[in-house]
Image 1 (tube, rainbow over the protein chains, first blue to last red):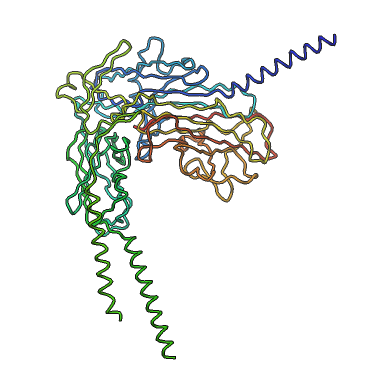
Image 2 (tube, rainbow over the protein chains, first blue to last red):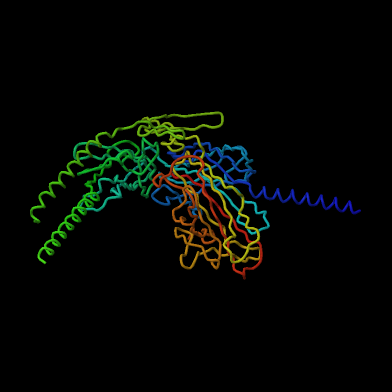
Length: 334
Length: 259
């Protein structure tokens, strides 16, 4: 009898240990999703239908119950971030559906751990749809499972891909831009139309472009820095989407780094310095390389800091010399 | 004496600046254009975007692809033009987002201590994205089945915080609530120095929207690549009079590339 009790206790202990360890494992499970492509730009005539394949993968350790939705978005800032509009409804949401035989937009579906699901998004734009731009995000989200009997915060993840939709009959929607601002960010001071910069500082150009037209566009062009001795330096603009009724801070791309980067003269200039008067002209076209939009700024580079230090040193030497002569004079007179 | 020194001084200064100018010009002339545009993760094809036009098809799908300047008349015949992905980044790395845990399990909470903490690791692969953002929002306060709540923290009274860009210190064990700090790659600068914020609360929508907890745009220094990692440290501190119970809520993390 005593032996039986011991066996039961032992079995229960083993069961508890296994149960506890499996609970820890469950807690350590990860949650991950991936999507491709991250961006879709479509220009389409009213009445036309297109499809696009998205690859959604479950990178979690366990199967996930996933749902999908289409939300409109607006620019959150001037840098390309988005703000989803969860409470607004757009008629454009009805134009979207999944072409998969076993899956509808908005339905829950199970995506097994480590597997990928191809989702075929169908966009059907009704006839007589007015020419306009529509900015949307296709969002996939995991549904949380609250199972813990402890104080806890359950995680839920969503992954989105943006859709920029332009409805146009002709393929040439009315595009219009304004240069909202073009200046040197790290200038020391400004005098009239001239900006002054220290010779040892690489000028960082700020270009803010406003889309005042009725369709998105990409600025395509460059900035040309010209010196008084005829030398020229080119910074190429990165053609990023600028959405209607919004401003975007443009950036350039570096051939050295193979990366988009803020419009600043290349790092190779760090060991050199500018001196004298310069002008920088930005010119770009909308979705084509041209000089349809142009603006020029002037700046003057001078080694202010170095000259200041030099003058300060001279002044100190002068004062020391003057003081010592004064002291000698006093000593002699006494 | 004064008059005697001035011409020498200005002569030296002039000579010095003249020398600087010559050296500067000599160096400037060395700047060269470069044309290498490839790396392991992506390829920049600008400014010439004349890559491909027409229709691509496979057994699983069909896709109209038109890169760059379209041929005259193409749009009028097909009726559409599609560009998938960023035209200046050709990457096969999908945009992905991962959390290292399904839940932050705080277990039994001890009152008036700053050690009720749990961490969550956020990992992003942004190889195909021009930039990205991860936002977070809670569905509600931590709430028990009896509907008692643990409020969101407002940080120490000497350095308060909110859910937006204002972060604050949380060093006093009499500062109660639920909050978080971020540390690692691409996290907003306001978290530096171990400062905390509270989560945006969905019950206060549309006033409160999801807040960015991780992510950069190229203008902020985003570099496309794999394995960007940040750690979220969440903390709960409760008063002695907090009602007993199991408190729970849901945190929603949203990953979206830039446009």
